[in-house]
Length: 494
Image (cartoon, rainbow, N blue to C red; front, side, top):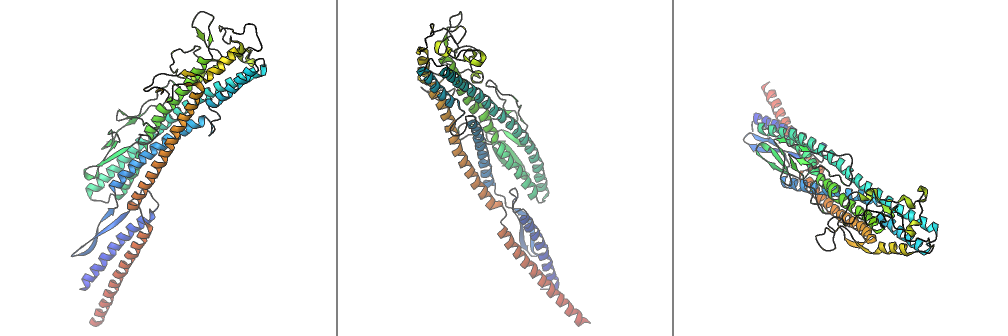
């Protein structure tokens, strides 16, 4: 080997090790960065020796697609579970101490106590107070359900704004990738930025990514609507500040196409948006209808015969803003929000609690105990029995005994209906919890598999750094040998 060849070899080694050490150092400094994909300097050998031809990025498209899918599923399931947890908090803790069902049970007990001592004003007052607690619990639960819907609506608005921002970031990164690819430059940094935006997008909406010429990428939602193609598509949503039982939430539109909501306790939704729509437009309204049916049942059970012109029956102990007794066995939207106990039995409002025993709670209601007998229990017996008797709730049902409007059995007592409402919510939440644990585990496995292939392993990088150091030492020895030879030649020449 000539001295010139030796010097060229050493120079090549120095160039290669310099590039390699820079790449390895960059890898090590980003070891904890989840959005960084490992790089490697690729060498090739020719007649001119070894040289770095490109910086290779450890890209794994199949694993990335799996990660995006599990990320969307987990985000959707966690958003659904969060909404269900909010609904559960409305009815108290594990004992459901603030639920209408609990207060109905207490009311039934107080009514029984009043039956036992029909002449006791204290017992009468206890029954009226328990009835007020039932009405208040329905009022509060109804308001809280609508608060859950309003909160979901605000989160939808936040996610839509974030999604539009991420699509804008994705456009910038995608343009940088195309520019670097077409010019032959290293596109690794731009690819990392694009992938980072893509991962965050997948948490908000299910996304499918397709790569075209020049590393250009096209994004579509899981149902095929284009999210990004050259430029981002607009995602629109109009938020509402106040929700009532009759409020219909606005839809989310992707490039003018409505985004469908998820369904089921193991939600079909992909990304948080679809699950938030499911909570706002399906689950919370369904629970609201159950509350409204409890309220309607109470007004109907405690109605009184009307002695004046007009309807046959008028509200008795329980009344509501509509001031009527529904006769169609159909859910009345928002009834739970306005149900109240008649002021004519509330002592603090000048009422007489004994009207619960005697009848005539309504100003036009029929008085049954016309002589004021202290031992009169006929009406109390009827009311107590009615609480445990089967009644017809909303009959719109696809199969016998199941209510499509509320999601629970329709031909049961009001006590059982209230209990079943809790059971429905708890079963939904329990199933969603199990599904959330599964999606979380799947995401963890996908993340681990992707990180193992694309992430930085410090042990591997440090080992590679030692190899680079050995190459550098070898080049130094060659350089020293050439230096000694040149000195020897100069000494001979002199």
